Length: 292
Image (cartoon, rainbow, N blue to C red; front, side, top):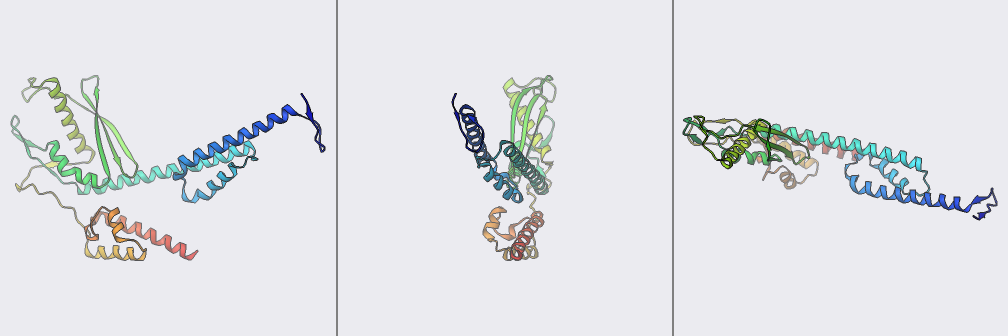
């Protein structure tokens, strides 16, 4: 194969030069492709304080002249930053989940037992009563609940997969194993296979829902089935929130929409501290920007 003469240096094989050029071009194309995929898929999870560094890495990665080993180190650094941001996001989502669960449980009423069991001469709260009295509160705090039958275990118990997900991004799941309801109070079989499945699935959902959200059931002692009303903020607390909204140039209507309330007096007392904390954080950031 022919050669080329470099006036400033020794002879270089044309094949070797071509191979080097192609390898360098291929590496640059792969780096660019990798950079674009990473930017598209993970740009949203980069921590704010890491964003300038990540942007610099992305600019450098677009340079076809960067050595491969240096590119690999910088991409590894970028990956570590994104992993750290992802961990921060997961921790924040988990924190939001448990904070919302605490507020939700504080509002949940004692579900009134409205159904009578003629065989045992007792009353109980059926699934419909629990969902009617509890699910609106659960949904208002950003939770979704799902149940899915998953066959039977070795003991013949119905497996029910459950999952609680929160709008903040965190979720928890597990499985409940429920003995199949095939017999009545006297121990005699009184259901078909289909009826037994339906009864067991409903029973399982009812008990799992109460257990997962710590819902209690009780008798209607007053005879009028009154739901427990959650406590709302006081007038003084409304004025504190209103003052912070003014100081942070926040829109009251948008604030109410985010809190899922019609007006400031409708805010629940259990949400007051979180609202003050978030508004004070916004106020502090505004002061920092003004001072810089």
